[in-house]
Image 1 (cartoon, each protein chain N blue to C red):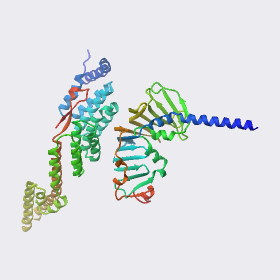
Image 2: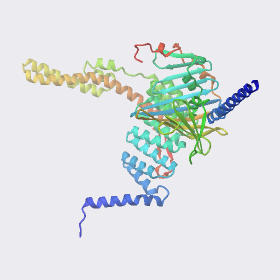
Image 3: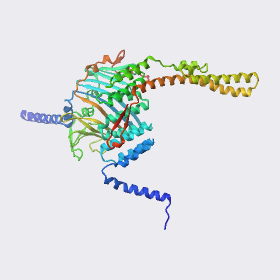
Image 4: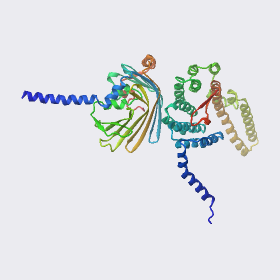
Length: 296
Length: 258
């Protein structure tokens, strides 16, 4: 009697699976529900790259072009969640090649991918196209996303025009844009210049805790430098000076960074008030029929 | 003698006449004539090119109206706008010191073809095959109608699918069809008028110098024979304070970086 090692057992089971697979798949015309549930489970667990691969596998084994398109779309969505936009785009290409009727769903995802990669011109192109000739809730989501994209392009009037394309009541969104337009950005150069006085750069952008921290640390280290110099302790003086140079340059850089952060937060706050957290999520339980849920 | 001369002349005329009739009845002419029923098209165009591992995506909005009216808004990779008002052609790339403009009557052939081709059709290729002798080629199960055209530089093959739609154009180095240069597949058809088809998806492959390059073009939101706002074709509305010149040499003088 021969004993089988774990490696042997694995290779035999894997071999059997690959041998039986074409036979098993030929029995059913298409994908069975438990197979989609596995991909969904991976997605629920947050393992989006694995879920994407599983959806790709389901797409490859599908005989119907529409089913294949739905699975490629799902793979694209999962790759998008995994921040792998280039693979997501490739999956969308496949989905659109297989089923031209999936274009709206593909363009929504392409717009989202373009926003992730901060390719605002491309995002605007997709969303603008979706604001016309589509019904609710697609047009609402597209017009809100287009408004956010315009804000990122520093085009406030364009953001208003985009939001006006929505067929929904967008009073809060318009209010958010007005508030954004009334406010002003912080100048990173001024932030950097003020940062030459420790803490002041942070304070300029409203980061008072960082300002206090910067002031205290720089004061302590400058005191240390003066004290060690007075006592002719040049070794400790050199060490403290080294750290103080780091803190001081950090104060200047921090002043610039804080201004950028302030501007970004201001924009993101406005954007979230416009979109109200609006997003699309696929209803995987309906696969292979691609059904999207719009959450606002 | 006169009778003999007349009969020769008549024979020549007959041959020429039948040849001309032959050209007029070619598949190329039939397809181009069919597209004449399309007066206007507006759409969004997404073109993905992949050559030698380099990928470029071009996105544009196109408004096309006969005769010679065109508005192309290229969003990416280069923000460029083309406006043709029916008599003059304007093109301007954002950030360039000057734009390009010429009367349509003085445009070069390639640009004229680009201006006059109906979007989402194969007209850019078909217009180059006009007036060329047609050869019948053996049908296949996928393509029951196949016609060949010797352009002098290459041999082009047009294939119609079972629904009589232009589904493929292939280009070969010669009529033996052994070495392919390019292949363009048309799909996602939309019937613009009875028997007149526009293709929403163009997938092309080119083989040159041992390299393969692919291009996929998608046409979305196609609107055919619907009115287009005439403001789209008024150049003055889109180009303010831009100096236009009639040649690319004047746009990018020697020594300039572009």
